[in-house]
Length: 580
Image 1 (cartoon, rainbow, N blue to C red):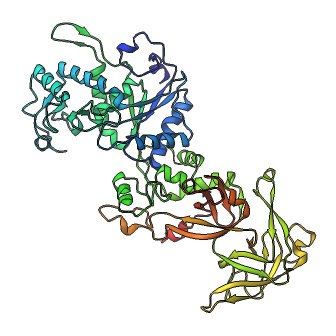
Image 2: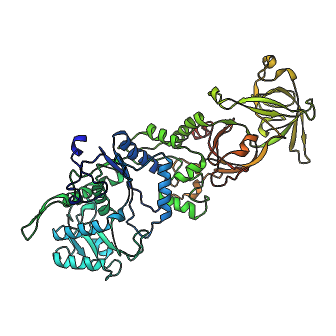
Image 3: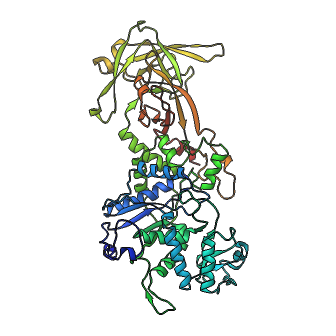
């Protein structure tokens, strides 16, 4: 493959064959591209494509271009361009090539090229202006089993088509009055080759070109030509474009071939050979998630979520806010691989990849999410001491931290039961547990309010059993609970996020999406946190012991008052519930 593309030339920017005639060899061995439309936020499926396109270029001494396919003026906004740039950078990639070129491009950069190339196809007899309405064209298109029928304008003369096409550009016609179509084969078994549209009239302002254009190229026409102008070697796309590949190749071949006109003059091809090769791969199908733009818009507009960056959404900006990591996405992309056949990936695979990376990089801290007081009755009032806890149990080089202990502590409400079930080894009257990193304590009872709700748990401690001392092992207990000193901890908002949907295939078939929403996908709690967490920086990640991995929300984090989002639990809590 390297030999096939070794003859390519590159002068530092996209261009036609003529502009590359005297250019030096391309320093990039291959060129790929990531070509999002700037009309929405990137999602998990785009992450797979980003790692594939940028990863191949990195691994084979090439370059990957970031190209915005901005051919639809009605739906594109600069906001989306900025968010796409940020997402690609967050995942760890740059679009600079070995020659030092920053390869950020737009399909709109090539509007003049595309227009002039379209005129050339008209002159060569490969395109014509059709004046049928959209409904009439649809009626003549045929079906999967029946061939289409030629438009009565198919044999319109070259000069007339050129005149009309130029007047389309000049704004002399209303939207839909004419369309430029490729002249291929209305009887083709591939419907995409039945004289597809190349240009439509749209009197709409474009986010980059303003009102300069009132005709816009179709995606099929602009996409392949943009690839060729940018010297792309491998145009990687998902399987739904497989049937479009013959059209992709037809457009580029017509532009690359030499042509002798009616005047007898031989003209060289407009595009450099070898031409880009389109290669398809299976898109990401993930359980418990919807990646359809239409369905995501529904979730946002109907306010089932709190916007595109709601941490439950499958957008990359939401994943970042939730606490997912680029390294976790990279591991996920490597683990699922690239295939031609469509298949479903369970959401737990993505969660496991995040856990695996976060386990390596997240310091340990203590948080009590549903706090109730624990009073050590025989601990002297006013006394305080320090216990030691590792910052990471598998990384001793990360050191240890001090945890203050006092007479009144916070523990999890679920760590006490007056009437414990069988196999319950935590606090209940008469039972002993170890305070993690601290002492062994024995429960003596509890206090309740007028409604019978437990307001405090009472216990006594064994002075000779402090962790790290010689007497620590003299008393054997089965339970081990975490805690925080009530005097030294601080309260903070913690968001417990879970899967947005409660079924593996939400909105399957024609069913409604909303009934499949998980009512427990977001819970807000006021937790008690270890003192050190008060100074957490936005996007700083931690493992809250026994609970999961959490990150300081970059949208809501303020100095001294962070709010934490749960990225993922310590273990897959859905696996058991999903079993029949």
